[in-house]
Amino acid sequence: MKFKSFALTVFSVCAAVACGTQAARAASLSVVADQLNNPRNFDWDSQGNIYLAESGSGGDGNGGVNCIPSPSAGYIPLCSGNTGAVVKIAPDGTKTTVLSNLPSLALSPSGEQGAGPADFKFDSKGNAYVLYGLAGDPNLRDTKLGSPDLGQLYKLDLGTGSLTSLADFAKYEATFNPDGSDVINNPYGFTIKGDKAYVVDGGSNVIYRVGLDGSGIEQVAALPTKLLDPSTLQYPTLPEGLTEEALQFNPNAQSVPTGIAVAPDGSLTLSEYTAFPYPEGKARIYSVNPDDLSIKTIADGFTQLTGVTYDSEGNLYALQHINQSEWKAIEQGGNIIGDISGSIIKIAKDGTRETIISGNGLEAASGLFFGPDGNLYTSNRARLAPGERGGQLVKIALNSGGGATKVPEPASVVAVLATAALGAKAMKRKRQEQLLAKVESI
Image (cartoon, rainbow, N blue to C red; front, side, top):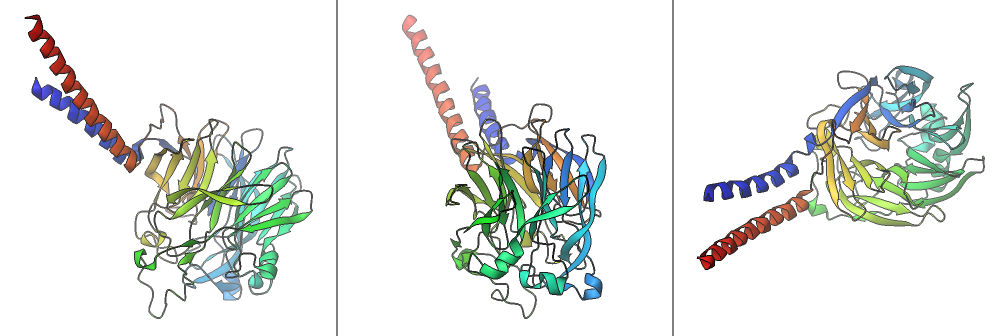
């Protein structure tokens, strides 16, 4: 009898611990489309088709002529080429190219970390828009790279394929450098609210508000830096002759915003990646007032976020690109040397965090959105060119059958263990009371 009671208590405790360590079993991931070329953000049309931006894998830079040193990858060459695209993915996974031969910039020769078409969105009237990244010095865009289309937001005529520029962020960065730091431009994602586009730039470390009526850039605000203790940071082994200073490391770390979504209350929610050396547990989530672009931190303690979104109940979901500092998993240049698994974390309205999925095929993903079917979608292996581990569009089912269960974060696991212990104590007290009642009846 004692053994049975003990076994029940142990089972309760073990179940709680298992929930904390088996996050990878909490949701079902399935591939919708594969062999994508540095896939990034996307949107749905009214028929349920997905329009996805492929940043492309750059090129040979016209034999090395159109190449620049990467400011964030150890000065490995970034070379241009026309490998970017916008593709339409039907509900059955069929791919159709909407736009091809678009400008792209990527590490050479791997084609990793492509910058080109970065995001695609429809407004409420069905108008289409596409955003191009850059990931380099905007002063070199037109001349050295020979790719003047990069670093801009365009309105797209889907009938003719023509593009109309609404904002040139590269030119703005080169002229004004709004965050006052290094001059780099890389528009990464945007969302539409009313007749305005809100664009996050991971190179300039800012958020822009742009009028979709052709009025251009209306306002810009720099994201807050974060003071880090250098003694707590880990670094990769740098190539001979290359120093941390050469990689532009600053203890006052830049934000590097990546994902953006409209919150249920109408404010904007932003995710950040953080700058080199990409410290674990230091990424934040911000709330931004769309009227004046004032910014406040609403959550902290994440690693390399690349997407945020909300469900219909107002719960927030955040996407961790890789669960460890990226240099531990991918060498500069694109060679995968470690685990590139990422995670999706649910943040309830009361602040409670649950890991919905970790690993189990989720790798170096970017962009997080709920589809019309109620499932989550993300661009998996989003920084990788086609090949053995090429880019994918994946669906993460959250309901039973592919079902996400609540997976406590470590702090929550402790709480569950405490609850289990209290339950065991209560059971023991109840047995004592029953025994006392039996004795008194005798």
